[in-house]
Image (tube, rainbow, N blue to C red):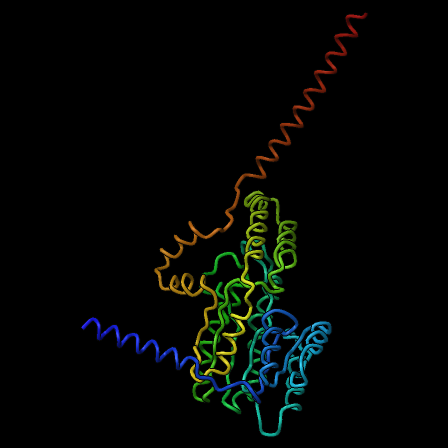
Length: 354
């Protein structure tokens, strides 16, 4: 009996493995990718171009657009677009409409554009800090999708949204985690709504990968220094300077050890776009697949206990500033006393000489 069950299990596993590799193929299809200056979007645009796919790659900077055009074929069309500006998105939509053949639409829309955001404790950051992250990573995705959705519906295509593994186990990622949790919920709701139009929605959940957004000084060190400089004396005393330094050290180590195999992410996006039986979610990286995703099913008190005790999250150093100030005050007092001693000695010498 056990042998029969084992054979059935192996047979089912092989069947799923085979079905997972059935593909519709990218050749001749039209796909729009946002955020192609660098990182995942740039690598995906080049990969799809090599496979014969017609790509609309949106870039934010002229330099990013020029670099991408120089190393791709005429199947790839670079379009300047800023997801923060509604007018820019509408202009990009107009350009895509002009370049699409009559009667066709977008097979794929890949919402990849995003910013890393600020790390650390929430009361370090202002409304404007949170606004920028949410407007790019969440509201930008929603608006781009709304504008281009008619072209995707037209051919019963697919929408792929870039989330993050940090959405499954948020700790110190600041507004970035909030935006990616928003992407998860938005994508789940959108998938149910578009079911009636035979249009599917898929979520990519990568772990830490070495991209431009993971550059330590630009993404982490500079914002942390700004946060420290504008803290009140009370906040600085509550957290301590070493808490900032520990965050910088932590994310410096993460940046150095981040996975360089970007193709794991682009392969997942391509599977979501062209597989006959695509997944709803793509956890990319062992940490996400085997730790963060299963950990989401734990009771909250267990999850909180594990994160608090085993995740390297810098803790406040209460009273550190007060101790440092007390030391400086003591040193100042000691200096004054030493000065008084010197004066007394001089007075005594003067008295004896008289």
